[in-house]
Image 1: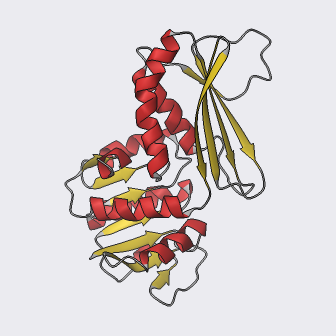
Image 2 (image 1 turned 60 degrees about the horizontal axis):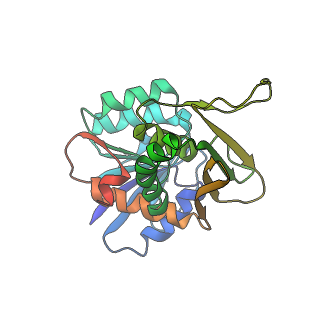
Length: 251
């Protein structure tokens, strides 16, 4: 039985993880933390990590970027593995993850779904061949109106996967409104759409001469992310310090 401390337990994803974990005999949410407070019938909820009394095997974080520094410090202090699902991290926070992973196991993913992580693997192989053939690369992501960061962490992760496959990294471009020129070859355009209740849509377009190849992923429920987070928690509990990814979970 893997005991989870769920940070950000009262948000949309927190509710989803709580529901799915309640049906999985291999995990149990031991306690939750949320600055806005609330209460579940199955576990205690605290407003800060320092208040937590229960013991856990792993921390799952689905909160906000502003809270991540505190989560990292807590996990290092308690020597707890961390599944970090929060997006919108600063370059400084991302760099700090490498330091933290020397002390504890950290699994960071911008998207916890099986499908997205499979597409990332495919892109690493497909991108160099299509780029060499003269295909331009664009990413379009769509999310609900409540999402705070743009572009999405998943869109950036997809672009980074493409660059990992290329001999020379392409530049990420988020806005062309101030430019009046033909499209440069070595760039990846990333566009964000916000509206309604879209859970998460991502399209990676390779546009060539007279043909377009599109890799698409549609999330119809947050359950796909919650399931991935729980599987990651099971995987990470008991692991040695280091940086892990969803590729390790599904290997």
